[in-house]
Amino acid sequence: MQQREEKQLEASVESLISRVAHVKNALHSFIYKLENEYERLTWPSVLDNFALLSGQLNTINKLLRNEKTPSFRNQVIIPLLLSPDRDEDLAKLTEQRVPVFSHEIVPDYLRTKPDPEVEEQEKQLSTEAARIGPEVAQKQIQTLNKLCSNLLEKLNNPREDREAENAAQRQNKPFFNPTDTNALVAAVAFGKGLSKCRPPGPVAQGHPGQGQMMSGGPTLQQVTIGGGSGQQAGMGGPVAPPQQGQPGKMPSSIKTNIKSASGSMHPYNR
Image 1 (spheres, rainbow, N blue to C red):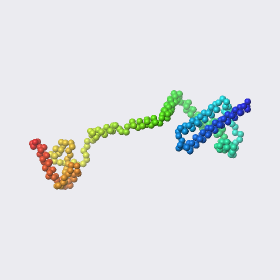
Image 2 (tube, helix red, strand yellow):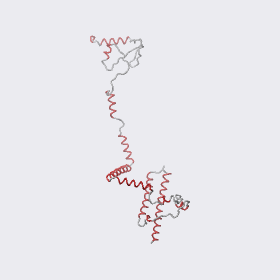
Image 3 (tube, helix red, strand yellow):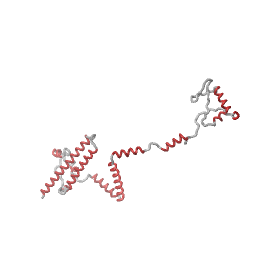
Image 4 (cartoon, helix red, strand yellow):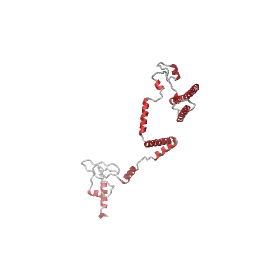
C-alpha cells in the first residue's frame, strides 16, 4: 500500500513538473517576443500568448484537483543538508537560479506562508473590510461593476464606431460664441453699445452763418482750406494747414461759388 502511494506520488510529481515546464517555455517565448520583437508584435498575438498561458495554468489546477492526485499539502519537505558552498548539481537542476542551498535562501524557497509584512497588510485589509457595512459595500460593488461594464463596452466596440463618434462630436462642437457674434453685428449695423464721444483734437471754427448752415446735415464737417493762390485741394487729398501767424487764402473761384450758393439759399431770392 505504501509503495503504491509512493509510485502515485512520483507519477503526480513528474506530471506536475512536465506541466510547469510547458508554462516555463511559454513564458520564455513570450518574454523573448516582448524584448526582441516588440516592433512587429501585434495585439492579437499578445492575446494569443496570454490565452496559452491561461490554458496551461488551468490544466495545472485541474491536475492538482484531480482525485487521483495525492494531496501535496500532507507532504513535508525537510532540508537535509545546508551549505554555504556552491552546489553544481543544484545549479544545473535549477538552471543556475539557485547555486547555493544555504541558511539565507532556505526560508524563502521553503516558505509555506507569506512574508510577515504581507501578513500584516492582509490583516489591515481584513480589518478595514470588516468596518464597512453591508449597504456601503453593496453600493461600492455596484459602482465598480458599472465602471467595469462601461469600460468593457468601450473596449468591445469596434474602432470604426469610436472614430465615427469622435468625428461627430468634433463636427457638432461650436467654434464661436453666438452672443459675441450678435453683439458685433448690432454694433456694426446699428451702433449698439458704442460710446458717444467726440474725437480728440481741436475743431476749427468757421463763420457764424456757415456753422448754422452745416449743422443741418449729420454728414457735413467743417474743413479749413488753406494755401496760396493757384493751389487747389482735392476732395480726398490732404489739406496743408495754414502756417502759424498767416491766415489761409481762399481761391477766388471758391469764394464766388460760396457767395452764389449763399445767395440762392436766402428766402427772399427764391
